[in-house]
Structure formats: structure tokens, C-alpha cells
Amino acid sequence: MRIENSFIPVRGVGEQTERKLWRSGVTHWDDFDGSVVGPTTADRIEAFIQEAKDRLDDGDTHFFGEVFPNQERWRLYENFRDRTCFFDIETTGLSKERDTVTTVSFHTGGETTTLVQGDDLTAETIDEQFADAALMATFNGARFDVPFLETSFDVDLDLPHIDLMYPCKRIGLDGGLKAIEKDVGIAREGPDISGRDAVRLWREYERGSQDALDTLVEYNRDDTRNLQTLMDVVADSLHAEVFEAEQHETEQ
Image 1 (cartoon, one colour):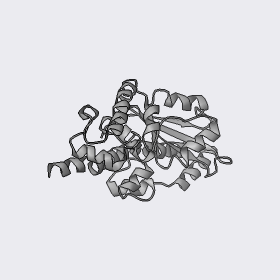
Image 2 (cartoon, rainbow, N blue to C red):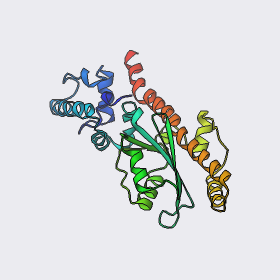
Image 3 (cartoon, rainbow, N blue to C red):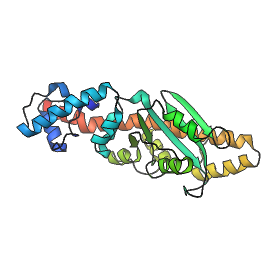
Image 4 (cartoon, helix red, strand yellow):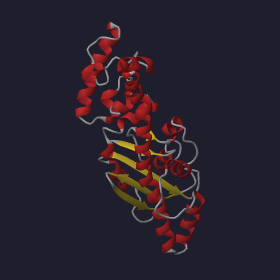
């Protein structure tokens, strides 16, 4: 599903009205002719489409991040797939005030980069990873990864954010990232370890084990790369559930 299929950002257009438009054959901004809805709503939709087309041409994801409800931000992904920055952090604990970020992996456009504490993990290198991104995506990052990075490095991660934990729940996928990966058949290339193991590996690295760091980095990179695979699964599932289902209803 693409942004251009969406009318829900318009004031006065809820889920029912949007689906009514789709069932009437108005499945894209270009299909809208003012019918189906009342004149006030029609004027609002036309004004939105005019502005949204310009914003989309400019790649202004901040605009769409503001006008789309949080639970519908997944709709931005198809338009900005190649400029979505997936990222995942490892830390020495759960407190963003007391604990330390040890590694951060970023995956954008098929390329994965990992930054390591004490080597190349700084506010500047974090900002560089987001410089060309249009969206950012995490799993449970709204509560953990984002505030942890912002507090630890005094950075401002203000891109529109898709926290995959919530759309996963929407399609019936509960639990942690690794449990959900197994549920949808996503395989891991690296070691099968836990967050607790990640803390242990960092402590071993601090005592001089390069192998421990290598294992930690591989684990962190797996987490991050698999976020894109999961995002693809979620986006396809929600597309079928939210959009294609209405097309099927119309055909019947």
C-alpha cells in the first residue's frame, strides 16, 4: 500500500469513510472526483491531495509522519523503502541514565553499518547514518532504542518512526523480535543468543576478547537486517488486510 492510496490523514475522514471511498472505486488520489462524500469533506480531501502531492514530490516524510495516525505510518514504507533506516542497539542494561550503548547497527538500502562504543560510536556518526534517511524503523524502539540513543548521545532522532512491535501486534504477532521471526519463518545467519548474552559478550570484550565483540556485532547486525525482512512481511500483511480486502469486497 502506498501513501497515494490513503485518505485517512484528512480531517473528518476515519477508517469507515476511507473504506467507503475504496469500495466506490476511489483507491488512489487521482481517482477522487468529489463524489461519495459530502461537500465539506470533499473540499478537505481535495486540499489535502493538492498539498500531499507536492510534499510527496519533495520527499517530505515529516509532513506525512505528522498527518498520518501513528498506527498507520506503515503506509509510508512502500514509498520510501530504499530510504528507511532500520536500526537496533545493544546496551549494558536497561537504564538509559546508568547503562551504556555498546553497539548500534543500521541497515539502509541493503547496506549494514555497525558502530562500536570506544571506536566509532559518536553523536556525529549516528547523525551521519540518518542524514539521507526518510524514515526510521525499529522493534520496540519507541520505548527503548530511540530514547536510549537520544539520552546517551544528546542526538535528536526526529524522523517519522515505524516501531514494528505495534503493527506486528495488529496482525497477531506477539512476543519479542526473535519469537516473531520464528513465527514468520525468518532465519538467522548468526549465533542464537539473547540480550543477556549480549551484555556478557561486551564484558568479555572489555577483558580483551575480540571474538566476543565479533559475535556481538554479528548478533546486532542480524537483528537489524531482519527488521527489514519483518517490515516487508508486516507491510504485505497489512496491505492485504486493510486495502486488498476492500478491493475483494467491491468485486463481490
